[in-house]
Image (cartoon, rainbow, N blue to C red; front, top):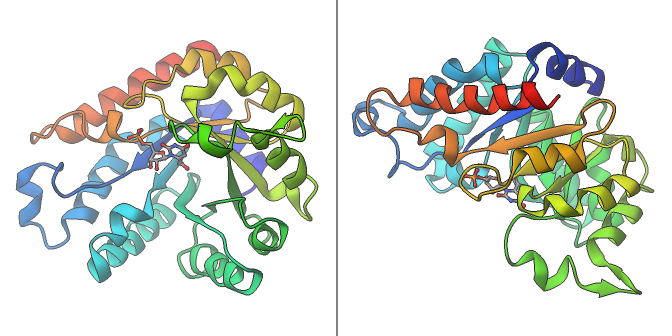
Length: 269
Ligand SMILES: O=C(O)c1cc(=O)[nH]c(=O)n1[C@@H]1O[C@H](COP(=O)(O)O)[C@@H](O)[C@H]1O
């Protein structure tokens, strides 16, 4: 996937919605548990019901890995289903990886080559040689945690280092890495007021913004402070969409929630 194609999709669909696939067998409708692969059955139903309203899907790998081999197989089926049926959607493996260089290369190969995701989320803590291996792949993107949506972001990310908050140093330093044009950054929707500062450091980069819906972030604030000329935003909602109903109408209910967000986005663009 190229950035140009992603931006085109955003403009055509008037949507920068990313649907998060955080699939928990304890939360999906009971009738799906009879299926041979309930996780994939749920993912497929959600994807089929929402694809025209969103530009990206973000399976969070934890929710698949929690079910061992079966979970990983469901992840593989989900990404293959997306790539075969909806190849214009941007796909994000939310795996939050990062390690010493040769290990990062293996993680990158796992998500970009074996599974064929367009992108993977990564942590900045181990620095340049842990991040750059993820940037060696053409038309693939690494999405670096910058300022996260959770309360614990105050432990390190907003702490002052040399007179500046650490997340700003992360953005400045990472934007100098080789092939930083293949970097995107995570900024929580609950931190919308920080987005003007963030845009001053990375004006052109795409930002993945989770935290609307279940975590209470405001879409209009995110757009107000975070949008750039190309839009440059992917706003994720997971639980707020996929668990809108636990009855047999779950896919229609998910569609209705995605439509609400898409219409709000169209109004803000
Ligand atoms: O990297 C992420 O996607 C992420 C970063 C962050 O700062 N906050 C955050 O919630 N996320 C992820 O975004 C999703 C949010 O899910 P909901 O709160 O259910 O919409 C989960 O998969 C989180 O792991």
